[in-house]
Image 1 (tube, rainbow, N blue to C red):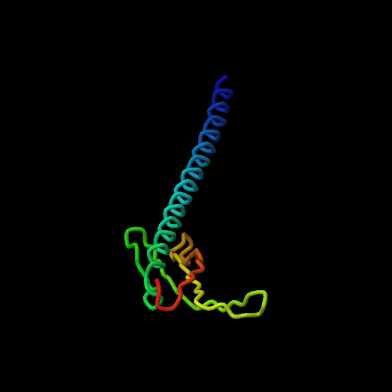
Image 2: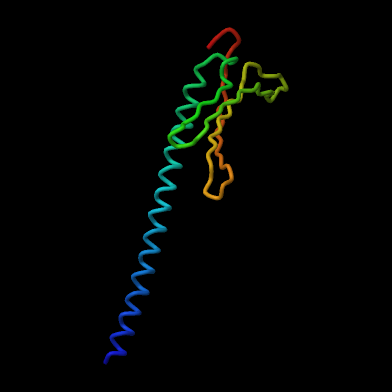
Amino acid sequence: MLFEALLALIIFSVAVVGIARALNTVISTSSTLSQERVMRMNLESFLMEIRDREIAEMNAEIADEQRGILYSAIVQEMPMTNVEGKELSDLYLLTGTATWPGSGGEQEQVSAELTIYRPRGGR
């Protein structure tokens, strides 16, 4: 009788530890996904703000010190030709990058790109 109770207690303990580990993994994953969602929304907002600037002022960086994320934007001319071979001008590629320290000590990053048509002399 004592042996059976002890065996049942051991099985119950193993099950509880397994459930606790699974719950910890779910919470950790949920937290990571939430942080990444916030970071992506902030990157999108950053790019929307930057694209309204003059072309010469689009290269910029901003740091979110609370979350440890660095947002940077780089603009470059985007050479493109149409089907007739004529060069299309006034097209720019705005690349935004969010960089943050990863869990393994390495830098992680995600990038987004926007194509901008900005005639010379216009906004």
